[in-house]
Image 1 (cartoon, rainbow, N blue to C red):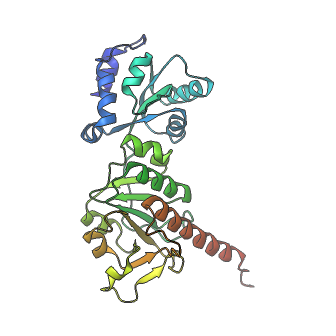
Image 2: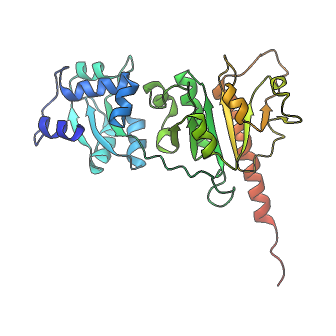
Image 3: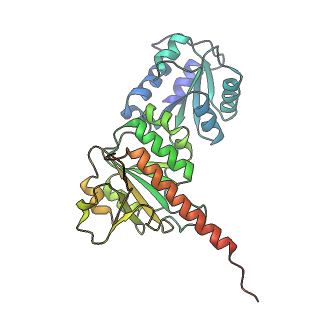
Length: 303
């Protein structure tokens, strides 16, 4: 569908697009506002120079980019990089850009990008074989706030987690607010929306830990609640981060073999999902980095 739209509307010359009823404009608007449209087309929208740069750098499939005449040198460089990767560049009027944007103050560029193919192996290899965080999987359970999910994905990408699995009830990873909050995480993570049966299959062989501030709910798992920094994150592991408001889902509780919590001696009752998840992910990175440093300083045996 998309290729035929581009060919029919912009075969050779690309005049400024000014109509709000143009098919490509309607497509962008649908991708911004409808999860079903994103899933049907297998595409989402990135807004702004930073995200366009990230998409081009990652080698993502950029179908086309809208830009306005006020695009600065950095934006122009990002557009040229996108064009080298095969993107069609289309100048649009400011009213069209405002109509297509999800933000109150649109930037000078936005682009339509294809979903990355999902290819997560069922059992990631142990730490140290590929990257320091290889073997750590993030599971997001019923996270409904787009900003929260975006920030958590950004943290996961920052520490080098390879995959994020989104359980039922979690906001769409390609919601425009999630994409903005992720700051390029969508191009560095394998992100999949799965049901719990699929999640359990994907994480087979991993130590599945659930972050929960109310560990008393897990009395069925004897001696299984740990302070987050006392758990052994050098093991191949999955960490479930659930909703702050609703707590973990029954499926998350059933899947977990251990519970971890973050001590809070202050007056706060809980942390939001992005903050709690970031703390735990960076602790996993700390442990794995330290373990790698120790391995690298061991003297080889005398032969």
